[in-house]
Length: 185
Image (tube, rainbow, N blue to C red; front, side):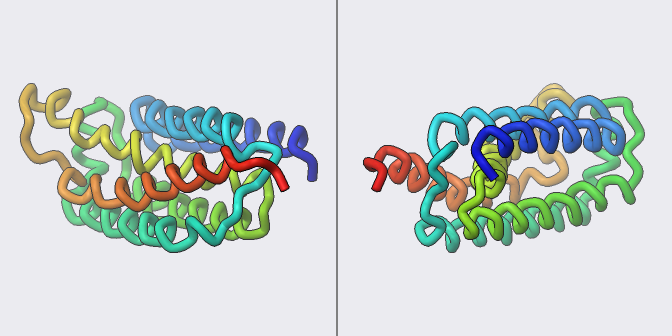
């Protein structure tokens, strides 16, 4: 599959994921999803689009970031993130919808992205970048949520572990940018 067809598929995937996020969780979560989907698209287009990166340099930090993301989702589950977000947004988010998005679709998508990345596909490169942006930018929304919800900084569901995936995701980003700057073989 060529880069142009991959770009069309990535755009369709992004629209489908943002729409699913909106339907299951409401406007604010969908906006956060859109940030990492568009951010991943921009990062991919500026770096590995048309020249898929070597997976060897990022597999371990990427898997660590996914593991830390799952730990983070467990904290969100234990502290009823769907309830906190429902109160924050005024949009009722059922527990089931939270679990479908955060505990199923998220990990499956991120691990599928890594598998496709290891096969050196364009879609895999995009998904890896979307994951990196999600873990380095979108997860930081947990720091903003207390101010929006309570007017000051205090605990908000998921706050303690939101930072965990950040470091290995940044390692992945740095390595992908470094590889993208190397001359083509």
